[in-house]
Amino acid sequence: MDVKRTISDLQDFYSLSLHGLLGIAGRPFYFKDALLQMDYAGAGSVVIVVIVDLFVGMALSLQLAAELSSLGLKMYIGMIVGISVVRELGPVVTALVFTGRVGAGMASELGSMALGHQVDTIRVFGLDPVKKLVTPRIVSSLIMLPALTVIGVAVSLLGGYYIAVFVSHQSGTVYWTSIRNILTVENVLAGASKPFIFAYLISSICCYMGLSTRGGSVGLRQATTRAVVMSIVMIIVADFVLTRMLLYVLGFSV
Amino acid sequence: MIRFEEVNFAYGARSVLRSVSLSVGFHERVAVLGGSGEGKTTILKLILGLIRPDTGSIIIDGDDITRRSESELRETRMKFSIVFQEGALFDSLDVKENVAFCLREYTDMSEDEINARVRHILASVGVEQALELMPEELSGGMHRRVSIARSLALDTPRMFLYDEPTTGLDPVNADNICGLIAELSKNGKGFIMVTHKVSDALKVADRFIFLRNGSLLFDGNRHELLNSDHPDIMIFINEVCIQGPSGA
Ligand SMILES: Nc1ncnc2c1ncn2[C@@H]1O[C@H](COP(=O)(O)OP(=O)(O)OP(=O)(O)O)[C@@H](O)[C@H]1O
Ligand SMILES: [Mg+2]
Image 1 (tube, chains in turn cyan, orange):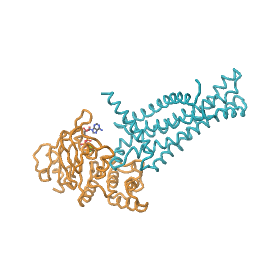
Image 2 (spheres, chains in turn cyan, blue):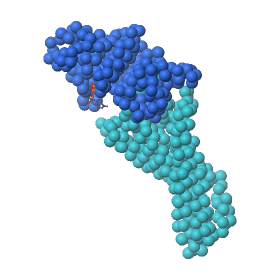
Image 3 (cartoon, helix red, strand yellow):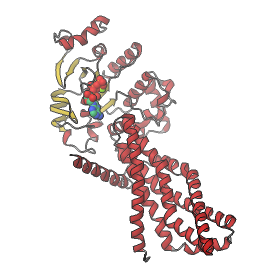
Image 4 (cartoon, helix red, strand yellow):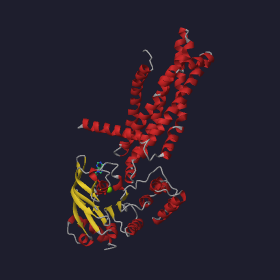
């Protein structure tokens, strides 16, 4: 009985995420809704992404400086910070921040719409709630999370630079040269493909959880919690799988 | 024509409707009466295909909607206009945008035309002063009236569905809404009004359906209702007799 339920829920989820994505191509496309979502998801998240990524970059640089200076290898700080931030930390940390701010918002907003019969009203008006509500959110995430990731990575590298130069007394030129050296096509691709996958995962999980909310404010709490927890777990798991695949495809030897 | 054939419906293990059969024409003015939790709202949701019966069929204009997919239901749903029990206004949009929602979706009116139409509709339900307010700033009665206004925006529906349109309103407001409902049904568009207030039902409807334990206890006209000797129905009617029926 429970297995059957889980399978049917999974089916619903796949169908929602698929139709949500395909909605980009079909008419009508709710451009204005997508724009509003982009404003909320993108412009509204810049400050928090900057703060979090700045401190992650600084902490990483500080740890490396402490460890590498005893070995006399401080000139490698830039390289290690660069690779970790571009390929791994930047995309993942930004996606986690995005989940907490935007994903939770999506789930609770759609959840309260579902509870207040607003989603039913959309259906009664003859509109497709997936096109009207889910597609604009997927689109806005697919555009905004990569953009935020670029900003986040840049800020992290700046944070690393600040620690390397002003705290650990490295040469700034060495730092930026090693950063430039690691910005190869492979490294950039390995980092840049992740936010698109993460954005799709976050938006479809959170929209699905929101729309399937039942049972009043307790149900809303559960739906939001589940949306955030699922998204975080999926981001971390997907990150590992993606890293494994990308390293293989891009020809890194492990 | 809406036809229920042996419809059974349960929420999980809780049976709500038990082999309900009835048919209602699009022009009829029907009141569905019954106590709280008897499945009145459930009937409206079934008509709109928002939920599906466990067994039995629901046939609307000869089309069995229980076999239709979500996208195929669109055409059926457009034949109706519903005012939900909770009003269900879009709480992120102001009153004007709520009422304009369907106009923007289905017509290519200019901004000026939309403005004029929204003002006109809001005035007809007596809440034109609420134009710029957000739903959370409305009182219960205003909320209800704005929902009615929103359901009037398009001319296309052939039948109105009202879920408890007068519950929780003061007598003056309730009377206004009954007047509005009666007014709207004059041009041949019928309605199904769900309520547990017999007095309001008597003001506007001419067919009465009484729901009890998931089945139809009574289905008849005003005269038959008022002369019914079924004890459960008499309890409901006595409430009116004590207050003094206004239309009977
Ligand atoms: N989403 C739901 N999940 C589970 N049970 C439900 C749900 N909605 C309604 N029910 C149950 O179904 C029964 C019928 O509900 P319905 O909303 O149709 O009642 P109603 O006649 O409209 O009552 P009221 O006059 O209070 O609005 C009730 O016993 C209710 O507890
Ligand atoms: Mg009800």
